[in-house]
Length: 313
Image (cartoon, rainbow, N blue to C red):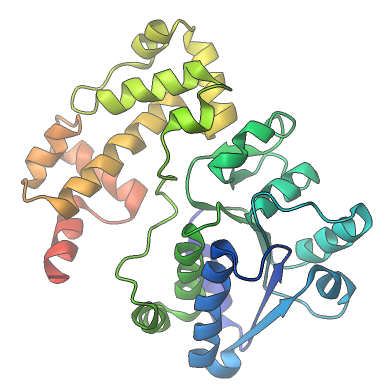
């Protein structure tokens, strides 16, 4: 689901956003989440009411109705006491959209409230997910929106996540002012993946999955078929599809397509290759197929992506 879904909240006279920090006050994940929203609040005035509470304060507040409620925690943070955790989770779930940032994503998954939901979990916590992969769906993206559920892997990605929320809630103008104040040139979208080799995320846990993705990354210009990849890693097609669905929330063919399109987007932004050349370099023999697939994933055509690059110079 697109973050554009949140834009319907822009019609509200006052937006109520709750941020709960269960980690360190100076952690990058928390600062990246809270600071852009604090700046946005100053710019938006009464349009945005930002409540920053402790876990105990949020759990005890039974009167406020938040539009968005987010819990942040460091990756190695000790979980909250069970009684406080249950009360806090119930308050988070009362918001229109709710979720977690950093280690809090794992807490919510372990609480059993993210069944069947695509979640952006910090890659460093993937080794602790054996009990939740039958319920939540792990996506390698830096942040995600699935139904009413928001999640972000934390760290520096929290800044991109927070700025994306600001644009959806308050518009591109407010987001641009916050970006300028923070000296940020580009906001990474939810389609971008955590920049850590898949071997680091899955190597020991799922070596076949890591091997399959490595094959995809090495064969962008001349894509392999799903059957070829399955055979090369020693799995049946069905076994490979099951691994991708469980750990990446996608079929191999879809994951491969998005990998090629991500590469195409990078080439359009960072090189002077023609659009036709970029399509061919990323395995698209048909210009119309390339344009249609690119638009479906990113919401604009390759030509518009290139024009955006030229306009930013």
